[in-house]
Image (tube, rainbow, N blue to C red; front, side):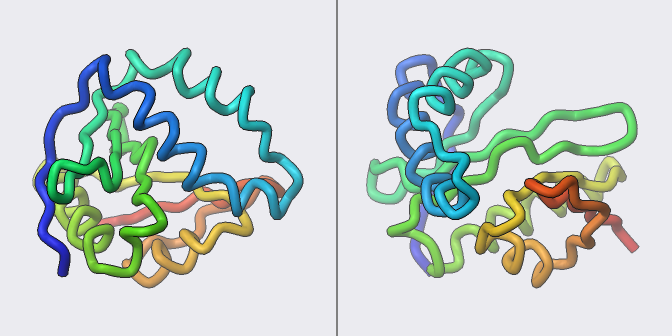
Length: 146
């Protein structure tokens, strides 16, 4: 398990988080012929200030980030990205367990969306998320506390 710390992202983190976002999405979106780097970067930056991003640092390097949004009937895990070079080290699992624990305390279910052909689908299914529906491009998941 790699050691990491979580910090609130700032406006000065906009570029590095955008780059990580693009890097994390490239393979999955290329597989469905939907990767447009300029459009994705513009969209991410356009909405950057609407979300409270938490950056994940490993030895002062941004290794990932996430954002959650509290909705009336659920917690929406809007962003959850780990730099591919830091994947499969247990960090994503630990972060997701913390998010689930925090949601359980409220208690609200968690919803998220993953690209249909993304390896992230197996990650979420393995951790108790259930496929709610698919829209042909994205899978919509739900985690309910029992």
